[in-house]
Length: 395
Image 1 (tube, rainbow, N blue to C red):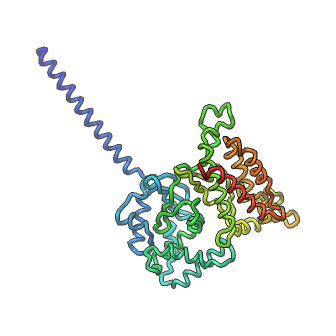
Image 2 (cartoon, rainbow, N blue to C red):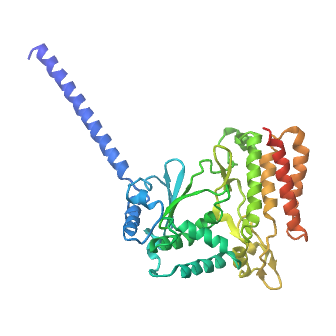
Image 3 (tube, one colour):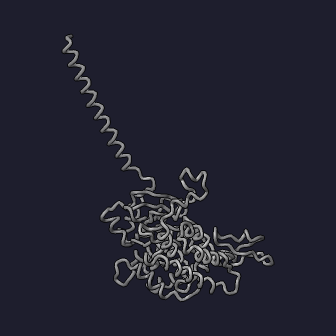
């Protein structure tokens, strides 16, 4: 074999190896793409198929159904989180789709389990919802609320509820989070509902899903316990969000004749938009006074520790009856002011620190056991709101 022949064979071998390597790389990349495309940890395709079958049969309805089933928009492709009875999908950048599953089967939609009541009259259905609202929120006149709920459930806006619309609306109302979202849709602090189909619903996604993280990732947190302060937005942005939280407390204090409490007031309970508008993240921590009373009045106790409903909702133990009371020991506003003392005083303009701290200290000294507690709360909320607003309205 000549030297030229050997070199030629070597060159051909190198070319063959390059072609083979390129082909192998393309094949592996293609396989990886297929695996990624087929990866479906939350069973989104199965959920869509099950829901669309119900939609085709007229068993469910909703403004999201057409996009999901007819246009095949990939609403359920990006799995964000899954819990035993709830799966969450991120749709685009701005919508969070929540899918409620059956209590004892994480692969079956809870809508499937609803009893068939085809032929029910609209006035009967209205009475069903009225009864349900009284069970959840307490006795009262829910005429306005009923009108709002029925209007929402009329997805095709023809003034009448079809079987699929009624069934879908009823399944949605069984979830306390959705009920709260619907009741407070005119409150900007609550995420907006952006469509439903059966018992699944899309809500506004809040990317900044906490006020701040006390466990700062900075290496400085090893030496400085308050290093998390450095992640705070500028003071005027925090002041705007603080007003949002105060207004939220004012709004939930009484809504359509129903009193509510916020039972987890933490940095992780609130988020905010790119425009620094406050949004509630922990929606389920909003509890009606009736719900709290029902839960606590039936609870036996030996000490006050036995009367803890949640992080911020605690009542007292009646030692004679060995039963929990239904009245909060610590008012919601006091707990919010504990949070604002940390969040708002840091970096506050020098000329307002004395007055701001005085107002926050007054707020922190609130006590539900005082005779004038309700009046004190209302006055302080108003004073705080006006004072903070006066500092930023021209900014």
